Amino acid sequence: MLKRNVLDKGFINVIDKLGSDLTVVNSARVSFGKRKEVFDDKDRKLVDYLAKHKHWSPFRHLMVQFHVKAPEFVMRQWYKHVVGIETTSSSSTKDHAWNEISGRYVPVTDFYEPGAWRKQSENNKQASEGLIDEQRSAATIFEIAMKQAIESYEKLLELGVAKEQARMILPLNQYSEVYWTASFQAIMNFIELRDEDTAQWEIREYAKAMKELMLEIYPETTSVWFEAIGK
Ligand SMILES: Cc1cc2nc3c(=O)[nH]c(=O)nc-3n(C[C@H](O)[C@H](O)[C@H](O)COP(=O)(O)OP(=O)(O)OC[C@H]3O[C@@H](n4cnc5c(N)ncnc54)[C@H](O)[C@@H]3O)c2cc1C
Image 1 (spheres, rainbow, N blue to C red):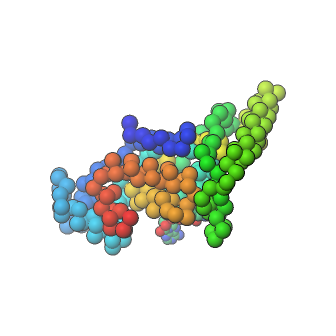
Image 2 (cartoon, rainbow, N blue to C red):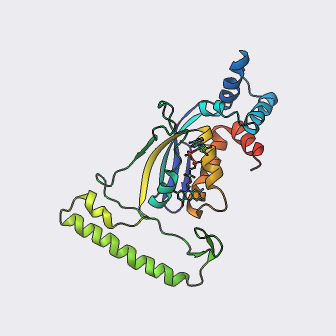
Image 3 (cartoon, protein in one colour):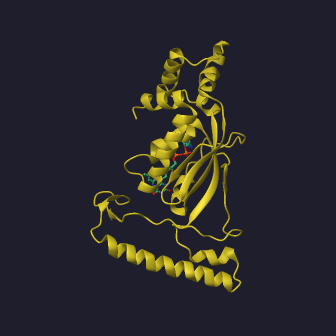
């Protein structure tokens, strides 16, 4: 199975995929009744043309199903990527092929621990920039808060409180797991928006891992796509 570890306890696993590099070019060539069995330089040029001229429908025949483990605050950003996710609904926003582990069934056990504490950016209100000087102090505040939250959660469970309610006191760094199925075009949109300077560092790590996996699954289509859009 193709897999990348991300952050301290997260990962992206490729569960399944539909199509190959030939799928995009054969989907485009059906217009003139042609089909090829071997990917060559002409196909590279065709992928480049399709990507540059926004002929995106052929790229939606490739689908990948991922199993992702990421902190909840990363999942909340990821969840905004809804278009091109699943292919059966006719609604413009479509149903979201997103299935997530439930804290109502499964006790929360894993939490993301940042390796470094970043400084609030001065010119971008939502971004970070460099590191703060007081790394040890920030780490201590984090450890105390986490210890208290986790111990309180466990005590509530011991008292017999339902998991669905006890979880309310847990912070956003709790790890979650989802199955996410998306088209090649939607995955490229995710990578372009999330492996980018203004995106949060943690989701960028997932976008970078996703790019590596896509280069392994569809090597030609992915590399030509990124060359075509200049990335
Ligand atoms: C750095 C950064 C900061 C962000 N900050 C915030 C924030 O503060 N708050 C917040 O709520 N969200 C925020 N977002 C999320 C952002 O607004 C998008 O919802 C998210 O990135 C998903 O991207 P998308 O809309 O391209 O994805 P999708 O919804 O999956 O759309 C994919 C593509 O489909 C096309 N498309 C989608 N809808 C239509 C339509 N109706 N008509 C025509 N074409 C369409 C567009 O080309 C679009 O790019 C942020 C994203 C980034 C990268």
